[in-house]
Each structure stands twice: as structure tokens, then as C-alpha cells.
Length: 511
Image (cartoon, rainbow, N blue to C red; front, side, top):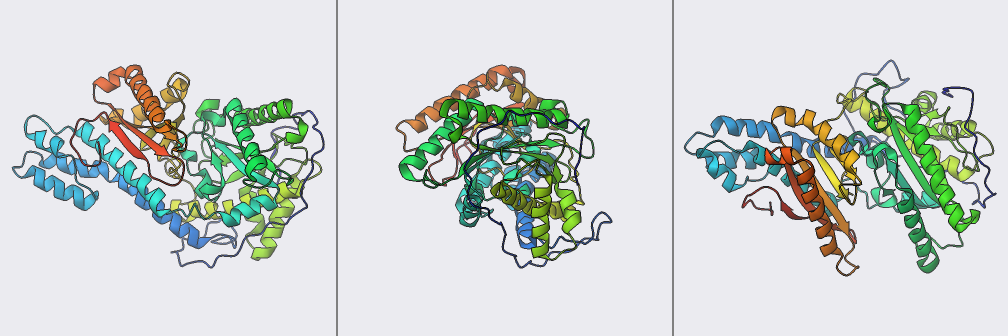
């Protein structure tokens, strides 16, 4: 089904012909589903579950979501219980027993012991618990690989078969898109380069630099494949919109205007390709892909490009239409029909590798549509923001859950001030309005293979922390803003390392 905003199509300048790999047909193995409690069928769908839905993966992803978010959401109820018992003689020992039983860790002794003097410092205690929970989430992600993101050989081979040696995705920094890779698109995190930006407006110069480093590795080390192989660097932008409340719950950076969000994403992609071709000639070109994400249902829309990379902003292929058209088919028939629907939407001669890759993304998204239907009633109850903390800086490879973190990707507060102000405004409603502080995790990743990199990352984090305390001085002085500085060695899968926080305590774990 073709969705249109108008009859005109944005003209694009022609590009030089490009070499392409041989056509491929992408398929995925059928996974034997594990039993999951079914929900009543919806009148919107021909059957209760799509034949291509990976029920086992859905069950595993639900367990991770419930465990991780549940750890954050248990903090306030436990603190409410502590507030009611803080005047009791054996408060400290009872408080520690309660925290250990319900949160899984003990609380900082200093804060508890000082409760008899005046009042339990709930703001510091809340922030401390958020930071402790974040640390535990990070540790588990890197040490246990609960999302199986390091097992990416099969997907990487499919990427190569489709004609791409690297996948670089920029979703909007909105917390409702933080799960885009692992959940919505079902891509192992080890197979993708993810850099969230507000409005999905990625930095063009930085992305060109990353493209250069990627191509250099191909020439010098044949990583991820040799330079003589006819594969491309695929840059993808994911903008977002709301199907239930399009005028209010869309992308704030674009005034909840999905047409503007799509146009801005396409423009940024075009500028990136033009920058590469201007600097390295047309033969060094990249491939581009524009996706939209409905934050209410997690269904994607794909602006299908033709062989030259041209895609229409006025029409797209909606995963919900793909679901409806293939739900009654056998798995192999459904896959074939998905590929046909992609090809039908191509505005001109098609690149078979790109068509196969889009079909793969749509197939993966069918599982997520069923995930939202089965476990969230078809649409998320938190249509707006309900993030648990703000992430500031560079990093956060471990965050793959919807509405867990609001991202402000930056190297300095000055360059990211607009994104930060949006995040603080969001958390003023979520936390400050209830007397709770805004927890911010300042994070800078580094490469230990580069001499002095860790020390420079820490200095960058310290500068950002000082700038945050200055910019939001009123909140900070009232105890309504707390910061944690964290660094991580990106060479490998080591967890993040806490450097310090703004909370005065002798608590275990370094904060």
C-alpha cells in the first residue's frame, strides 16, 4: 500500500552509475517458538501472531525489559517505605534489609545514619539508587550479553550479501527510540554503528570522518571486508512520529511534524553523500536509507530508494500493511511477498541488494509489532516521555530499552545546550515536579590503545560536569540535579567505570 502526502516528488540530482553486487534473496531461518501466553486476537490482524514472528526472541526481550526497567521502577516504592519508617529506633538495619530484599543492594550508610538529625535525604538517596541501578545494568549488559548482541556473524553475512560492508544508523535521541536497534529492527548491536542525535540530525563532518576511517581499514586491513569487494557504506536515518497523537507526541526537534522530520533526515543524508562524493569522487559514494518509526506501535515505514539512491518523501512502505498482507501466508510465501512489496514501492530501477536488506528489516519488524501487541496491548501506554535518567556525552552502547534514557550526544555543553535544555524540561515534569532530582550520567568512551585516552576522557567529563552545574545552578543548589561521571574503554566489552558523583557518601560501588 502506498501512502501519499501529495503528487509531487522531490527532485534529486542524478549520480554516476555505481557497481553493484549480484542480486541476492535474503532469508532468515525459522525459529521454533517457545510457549508464550497468548492474548486475544485483535480485529486489526488476520491472526494472533504473524507466521514470521520470533516468539522465543520476544519472550527473551520481554524478560530483559521487565527486569531492567523494573529495577529502576522499584526505587520510588522502596524509598516511600523508608520515609514512613525513618523515625524508628532500628531504622538503619531495617532499611538495609528492605533495600537488599527489594532492590538487590544496600544503601549508603552515611545517608541512612544521618536521618535521625533532621530528615532522610531522599533526593540524594533517589539519585544514588538510580546511579547504582545504571551501573548494574551496564555491568550485566557487557558481562552477560543478555541481548545476544555479540552474536552477529549471521546478520553481518547477510549485510555483506546485500552489498553493504558497514551499517551506520542515526535514530533520534528521543528515549522512545533507544530500543531501535535491538528491539524494533532486531539487529545485533555488534553489527551496527549507532549514534543518536536530536531530530536524527547527525553531524555530517563527523560521519565523513568515520567513513574515511572505515574505508582506510578496508584498504589496509580488509576489515570488515577487502576494498576491492563491490560493497557500500550504508547510512540510515530513523525519524519518528506518533500515529495516535501526531500533533503532540511526534519529534520535538521538528515540532511534531513528521513531514518536516522526514525531509530533514533526507536532507542530512543527501548532504553526507554529497560531502563524500565531493571529496573522494563519485566512485567512493555511499548508500542511503530513510526510515520512520511510529513510537506508539513500533511499526516502521521505509522510504524505498531506487538504484541511484533516490527515494520519495511522499510515499513509503508501512510495516503494518506488510503485516496485513502476509499474515495469512506460510513463512516462505510471506518472505517472498515482502520482497515483492518492497520492489513494487521502488521509484525506478531497483538495487536487488537494497531491496533484500529492506525486506529483512521489515521481516524483523513484524516480530516487534507482535511484541507490542502481545505485551503492551498494541500501543504503548507511555506515549510520551517516561525516561529514568539523562545520558550526556559520548557512549551508552548498553542502552537498548525504550524510554529508559534521554540522550544528549555531545562533547561540550555549549554545542549540546539545546538538546540538554529539552531533556531538563522533560525531567522537570517527570521528576522535579514531584520533588525528585534529575539524574544525569555523564559518559565519555575512550580507546585504551591510544596513550592517555582514559585521562583525556575523564577531563572531558569533568569539564562537562562543571558546565552542567553552572548551567543548571538553581537545580543543582537545591539538590534537584545529581551527576555521575562514567568512562568506558570501547576496545572490547568491558563495563563502564564510575569516576565520581556529586553525592557525598561512603557508599560501596564508588558513589
